[in-house]
Amino acid sequence: MAKSTEAWTDENEKQWKQRMTQLFESHLQNAFETYESPLEVGNRLGDVLRGAEVEVANLVVPRSVRKWASLENLSRWEDLLKDENMLLDLRTISTSIANTMRPLAGNKFAMWITEVLNIAFNQHNLSLHCLTKGKIKSDLAKRLIVTPIDGNTKRDYKPDIDIIVVNNTTDKPIAILSAKTTLAERVMQTINWKRYKDQLPQDLRDLKLYLVTAWETFPAGKVNRERVQELDGTYVCNTRAELYGNIKLFESIIDDLKALI
Image (cartoon, rainbow, N blue to C red; front, top):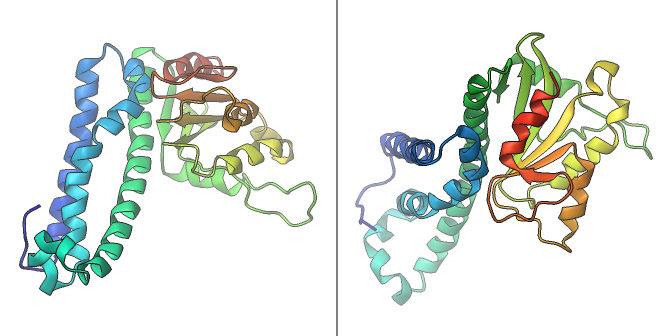
């Protein structure tokens, strides 16, 4: 890791974000060039994301050191293990690394799914598109509040609405995709919302709720393997998963979405 003698600046941050964007884009582009179809890329997005891990860390760690270490300590990192005072800085830096890498992976995973599916929709001549922001998504989010059975107050039980699949003909949402790198990320909120979906306005009750995960393998005997059976579909972006029930390889999502139109 290169040493620095100056504090982390706004320009440093701008350049870092640009390099991070280029890194993720290059890995996705390499996947498109490696595999024969966008759906095959989708099958392996978890592996592609994990393949970028070392390069991501090589960008995240130096940034965190330069951004969070006290200025007088920047030139002393090579002596880290010899100086107990440096460990105080390390605690802050470690938190920064973890807090940066988790959302980077999650956000990029959702964007990759969106890009892969939109390309696949075009290739399969499907009148569908995915979006991650905008008026359709914000309007939908306001209408997805349900009331728990044992309460009288409406609570925001809606799932993580990472991606909306829209029918181009009607301009209406037909499915929600909750994108999670692992199922440690609040998967029960998504499942709980599905249980109360009959309380939604009539025009939303046919809305499908799908889970897409990068790294989960759903081994036999594990609780999440059964939990996700309550969802309309679960799609894995790695080739190590043990497929079972509604747990399918990512490429299967295209036929399931096609059936909705």
